[in-house]
Image 1 (cartoon, helix red, strand yellow):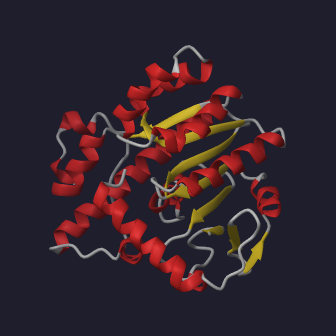
Image 2 (cartoon, rainbow, N blue to C red):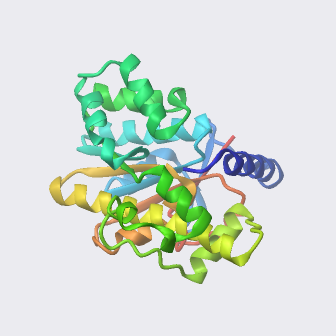
Length: 285
């Protein structure tokens, strides 16, 4: 989960770039322009849904505090559910260790009043931003799958690196997490966040924390898929995790299932994005 400074910085960058780069762009009646990356053309929401419906895993990125991003996520969920697809929704907002709370929510055995403190304990803020998605999952008995790792671990890695984790802390992570970095991934983080760390080491630690998230969430997804074949899984997570450099790259360690990646408006020029980044870019008005 991004901290408040990261969220504020990303929000500012998104707002500036939306105004400067896309003021003259045609926006559809739904308030969003859908940019199909493989051919560089705009497309309709219906055509996008038709395309992604064949994928076993669909990633939909978000800026956590942007309600229009969550509206698009819910619209996609509703559209796929309306096509009769058996769905599950993987969420960054809950730790894997608290899966039993999500199961109770979907089954209707916990009230909203009791669930809100649990949500806030896991995510820290924003129940109203996510409420409609959670309510739709509950109403339609769509499983919600917690994907996150303990926040204290990712914070520690972000400050002092993966090697600083103790044996006890490592035991709370999926097996095989290594936090190996590659330059392409690090360059991507620089582009998205315009990151300016105080030292090279601090930037490496920042990158390691992101990779730790990506690898862990990919592993949890793969484990769920093994036990629940036949379900289309929609993954809701921060945009940095849903680009092909993030969780989608890591999940290839475990599965060859068909994927689709949808990312929201971010501080990048659409023409600079290619199929190595995502499948669809959605610009919201």
